[in-house]
Length: 182
Image (cartoon, rainbow, N blue to C red; front, top):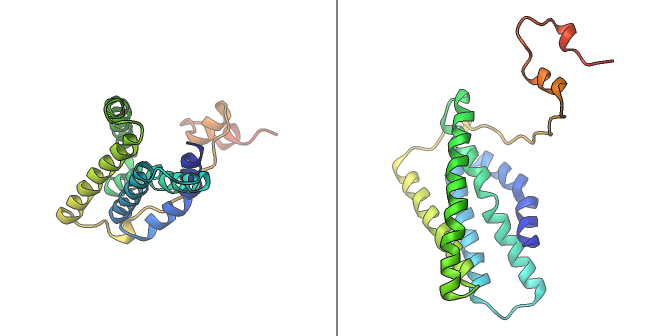
């Protein structure tokens, strides 16, 4: 699991950059298929060294754990910036539904077919997502490159009311009241 999470963390930024330069839908298809291949390999190749298992885990995590951020970026490309918060809430709701249903279904699969079927279940879900995205590619036009938002690494906001005042200054306050404290 550590290898999977590390793979997703390490490649989040490079895959985000790649998606800034290509149709994000094709990036999603590539990530889904890549993840499905590595998940299938983890499930069907039982005799491997620890190093091979870690490598497969990193590759699987890199492809599967970056899917959500690319989906969010693509969704944001399709809507007006004023709708980002609403879109994010819908995506989180769908993600939450999957986070509830996925483990229940995966548990049923694993209890019926064994532990390695977890990766086959994941590969099937990612294959389904790849087919869905391919259908969308066929039926809708790509977002023009000049309309794509660029990937930007956001530093965390500091905590406290002062940081909130800088993000959302109150109307009627002059600059002296919202300036940095000495």
